[in-house]
Amino acid sequence: MVRPSSSPHAHSSALVRARLVPAGTTEPAWSPWHVWVRGGTVRVHDVAASAVVEADVPGGSDVTALALREVARDVPWWEVALGRPAPVALREILARREERPVVGAVAVDGEQWTVAVNHATDSGPCRLVSGRGPDVVGVTVLDMDVVRCVDGVVAVPGGWVLVDAYFHVARRLTSDGTPVWSFGVDRSPGDADDRLSSPAACTVLGDDVLVVSEMSGRLTVLGLDGALRAVHGGPGAGPGWPRTPTSVSAVGEDRVVVADPHGGSVHLLTRTTDGWRARELATGRTASTRGPLAFPRALLPLGDGFAVADTANGRVVAVEHGAGRITGEVRVGGWPRALATCPGGLLVADGLGSRVLRLTFGDDGLEDADVVEQRVTTADGEPVDLDDPHHLESDGAGGFWLVDSELDDVLHVGPDGCVTARWTTSPAGATRLRDPHQVVQQHDGSLVVLDTNNDRVLVASAGLDAVEVVVDDVRRPRCAVRTSGGWLVAEHSGHIVAFDEGWQRLGAYVLRPEGQAEHVDMGDPPRSMVAHAGRVLVADWQRGVVYDVSPPEGGGGSGKGHRHASVTSRPEY
Image (tube, rainbow, N blue to C red; front, side, top):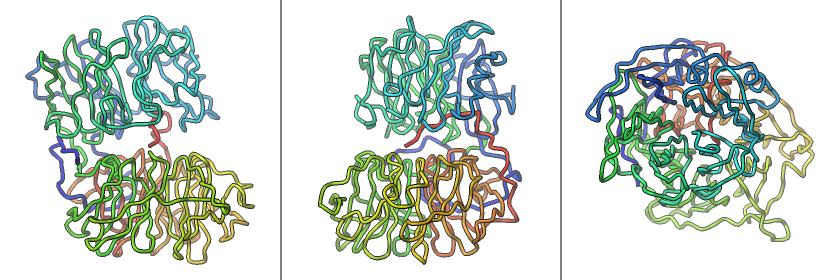
C-alpha cells in the first residue's frame, strides 16, 4: 500500500521538477530530526540548518501549533540536549578519527545522562557513555553481534532500552551491556506487528516503551518486559500521523512529541482509553515536497518514462516522464533497491532477500510481468551466496554487473547466470573495496566504481586487471551519473558534486525544487541518479519523489565543510 502523506506539502505526482544550484547560495528546507523535552520546553534539532529551536511545552491535546524560537546554531545538537558542554572524556572518544565516531542518541534524566556513540559506517563497536552532571562515570562497549547502530536510547532501572536500525530491533540491556530481551527479528524488518522497520527512537511513558520506526511510520508499544502491547500508525493511519518518524519524546504522562524530518513536521500524539490520537502541529516553517513513493532506491529509463524501485512498498512501478503519473506496477516483495535492463524485461536486486529477480514483461508490460528468481552460480553450477546486493548494471550483452556492499565485492554475471569475474579474485582485488555502492560500465568496457567507505572513485579496466584512483576526496559517494559534460556524484556532505570528463572537480551543488526558495537537505544522499531525455532523474528516497533536474547553474559551490560529520548518525538500508 502506498503511504498517504500527512504533510501540507504532499505531491500526488511522483515527479518534481528541480534545479541544481551552487552550494551555499540558498537556505535548506526545514528538517526536524531530533526532538526532546527539557523542563517547560520542547526542543527540536533542524538537521538541515544545524540549528536547535524550542517552543513552550504544549498545554493540552487540543494544541495546534508550536511558536518556535532559535536557541542554538552550529553547535552539536547532542551537546544542546545534554544541557552542558561535553565532558573531556566524551570529547576524547569522539576525537578518535580512525573510528569515525558519531553521536546517535542522547538520554537525559535530571543530572544523569547517556550518550550513544556509533561507528559512522556501522563497522565498529557502539559505546554507551554514561555520566552525572559534568562527569563521565562509565563507558559500556557493546557487542557488535548484539548492537550495531544505536538510534534511540532511554535509561531504565538497571540499564537501558535502545533501538538499533542496523538489526531492526529494540533491546533492553543491563548496565554492562548484557541483553535482557529483544523485540523484532535481527536484520529482518517488516510491517508485521512483531517486526520493526528501521526503528529510529524510543522513550518510556509510564510502564510503556514506545518505539517509532522510520520506514513503516509505526508506533510500537512494548512493556518494560519487552512484550508487545499494541501497534499504531503506519500506512493508512490518517492525516495526523507522522509518515517517517525519527524521534520521540514524552510530554507528561499521556503525550509524546514526534519529529518527521522528511515531511518537515512535528506531531503531538495523545494516549486515550482506546488507543492514540495524532495531530500535526503547525510550525510556520517551509518543508520539502513529499511524494507518493516509499523510500525509492533505484531508477531506470523505461520507454518514454522510467521505472522506480519503490523499496518500502515492495514493488517496481512505471512512471510517465511528463506528469509523473504511476502507470503500472508489479509486486516483488522484499526491498527492491536496484534495477537493470535484461532481454525482455528488468533485473531487480532485493536487498532484504539477498537475491536477484528477473522480470519478464507480458503483453501489458510491467503490469503482467512474470517474476522469477535469477540464479547466480559458479562455473560449476553451485549457487553464489549474496549478502547485500546494492547495485545492478547491464553489460549490454545479456549479462550484468552486481555490487554486493556487505561482501565488498563486484561480480560479473553472464547471460546464463554464471559468474565470470569477481573483483576479490581478480588482479583488481589488490585494491580493497569498502562498502562499494555502484559501478558504471563505460563505452570501452571499463568500470567506474564508487568505493563508498574509502571516500573515493575508481576506474577499473574491462578485464579487472588494472585500477586507477581518479577521485580521493569525495565523502562516501553513493551514486553517480554520466552527463554530457562529465559526471555528477552524490556524496554524504549533502551535495551533488560535478566533475568534468577527466574527473576534475567543477563544483558542489544542492537540489532546489522549482517554485521553492529553499533547497532539499540531502545529508543522507540519493541512491540513484540516471540520465533521461536530456535531463537527470534523482530519486529522493527520504521524501518519496523523483526530481527531474535541469543542468547545474553557475560554477557550483566549494563543497567544503561537511557539516554532518559530527552531528548525526544514520542507519544503512
